[in-house]
Image (cartoon, rainbow, N blue to C red; front, top):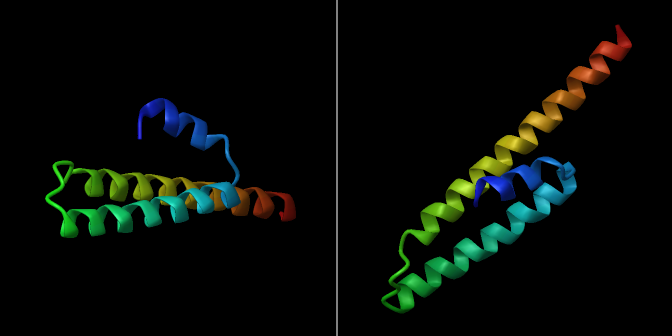
Length: 76
């Protein structure tokens, strides 16, 4: 994922980010199957996808934490 793509993901809500994670998980599984069945030349693709998933999950956690903090501030 390029930095500009990551910037666009920051503007999405949590549900859209979860859908993106699901899509990338399917893509990772497809890449693993392709690697195992054929002699794929693009073997680093799986690690790139795994890194992208981790970045999106981190972004989801940050958003959820920010929402929780905002609710706690309103209750105090």
